[in-house]
Image 1 (cartoon, helix red, strand yellow):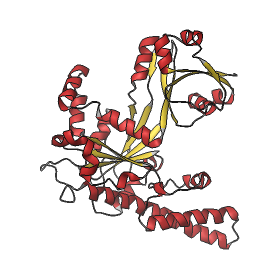
Image 2 (cartoon, one colour):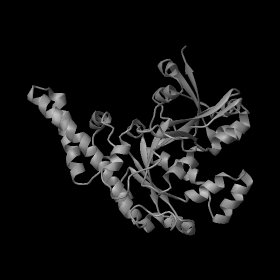
Image 3 (cartoon, helix red, strand yellow):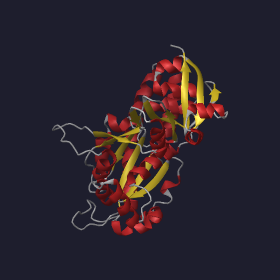
Image 4 (cartoon, one colour):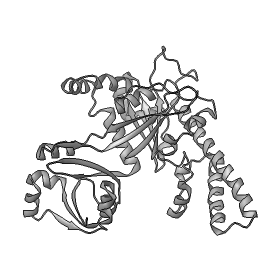
Length: 364
């Protein structure tokens, strides 16, 4: 399951987006404890819906994304306070961070900094992430220096070299997500759970009056340069409108969206942007008992994809029976795909493609 942490300054609409994504209401937290609200969102996928109509299974299981929200935040400009809020497992363990940035104008909901300035807020939050990571790096480097003086080995020296490079980047205001590190070095850093190393999706929470300019939201926010990195994206939504849409039945919601010129819901846009940012794809398993969508990183081979279903299937992997979603929909059955030579047998090194429908043969 993908995991994403929602961050943002007060009155940015972060909790409204969390409710939109998870259909949850904020729960009270125990006094004195820093705990995140966690909710699960079903990933809408028209392909799974059509496969379900075709097979009429007992269960229909979409892919899911887990979102975490602290239900508050630091004041814009208050350095260090957000870093403390983020130092909880739900954010450190997240695959990506979603920074909700306020662009809507509402005099009844004042901004903590006194004005609406998305570029300022993006930069301030980035500084908070860098500050939190710098503290982690410096503490580890201090320990490494002591251990190396006692005769630490080559592995510790290698770790020190990598962390010194990280510290230098952080001190110069550069996030670790933009460092071009070899895969081996990235594995060494994984245990530190650096916040600025995580892919970042900036969710621009628009004013209703600006919905017609959603395609220009990045430029209106003044963050074009900021989102140029390979692991940074931005997506516009209007959380207030999306929450209203979520209260309507499907027919009324579709009509309301059409009136506003929205082609898809805010949830769809955020999920699609998250998938694109993380490089995730979906494959499907189908049958009379269950149709299910599975999320895997792009480039995953068939044996590792089997492990998403169960480790026993991964260990006992023999072959993968694969057909394309489009072919299955056209033929109407797996047997139809087989008869038309559209069902393939693939080995464990086959790279799964988005939209593959797979049945794994495995030893028990």
